[in-house]
Image (cartoon, rainbow, N blue to C red; front, top):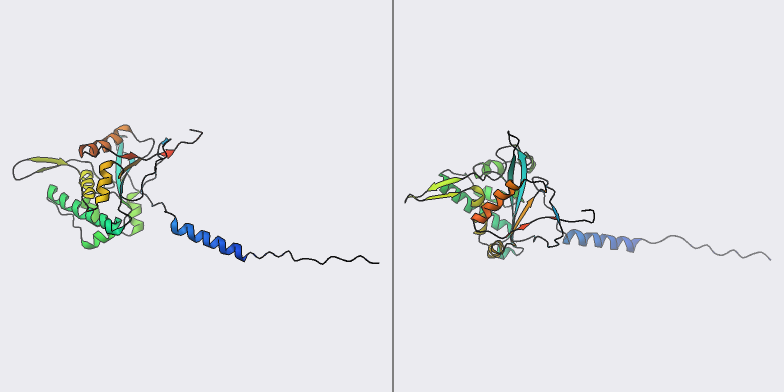
Length: 248
């Protein structure tokens, strides 16, 4: 009697359900993830054991880049990023940026007697910027550039017009009283007074100011930035670091 051959079974596996789940997971992560915003310069932050996360809303990021001047000395280049409240009714990011530019422009014109030439169109363009760092006198011209050109402009740290100036501006009022400031302080005051109560409170407590600099940044460069913050009585702030690994 001959052997009965077993009936062959198909090895085909229906992957439709698996594909559906994969697409759903991919869509979920894309919609819920917070993408890193592009920064003008790349810095490698110092490492530490702190696991406290910097907030993504109601925070001012102070990015400190560095280059060398003609004498070979390190020169700091300051960039600022502004993030408002997640709830637009409380003072969303774009609204805070518009208000900050208006206030900073008015204060600069008061101190220097020079017009910044900022227009309503400039306010809308500025509201879209993740990070900026040019003198107020050059901001109108900078905002007229295309996005790619803006990125190229800010990445040239050897350009003397890149970075928010720390040079002193002396103002004398009608009574003969003198006041000394600089554009970095003008910006920080403008951001603090931009109409977002949550951001102002965060700045007051220190949770709303994050300083980011390279691990090799010279102490004098950092001291100049922090000294300006302390002059404005913004004595609390966070210094951004990378999590220390076992090799460190």
